[in-house]
Length: 248
Image (cartoon, rainbow, N blue to C red):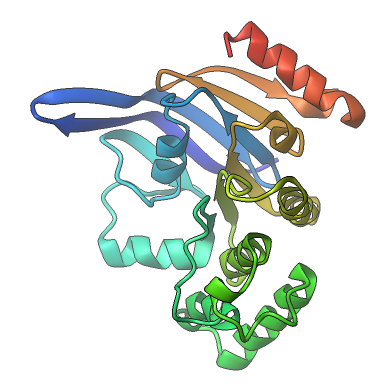
């Protein structure tokens, strides 16, 4: 398999009132094309910080990040913006739809910002809207639909430009169990078609959708679990035992 995302000695330090907080400490991580990786760890372990630095949504303090063998270090903001639009999709826990745009407008805007034709983007949006089963909601504002419908629109927005990597930060955190399962089922279906996904989660059930679990503790990778080795109906138990061994 081909490596699509890699970090080498990745560090992130926050400074506040002359106090340093090392959120990430020399993280080496390699993700292969088509993988579904769940990043887990206790609160404050650096999970979301890792996701944001890997995706270029936040700056790193030291180290290197490569997306499709291109180094992200030292790129100009315009170059990073182009990579985020063309190569990366991001699903936020807080959903983050633009409140005064309809669901369809939220979905298509990132596509219109690329060099692709309007017809191509509109066709892609229609495909995604049908797949998300929100055909009857697209003319509504985010405030007029349920949390599950908003997150489905957010997934469509993240997928509009055929991203190489889909990043997700606690994508079911703001949803009830049935809506959360529907969102995870959609993500899994994309992964089964070859979509690379990197997801932060604290939920064992959500992590069971992944093919690999990476456990983070105090800003370092403390262990990894290859779920492909285990039966699908036993993965939650396997993850629980793995996390327990790591002091979860």
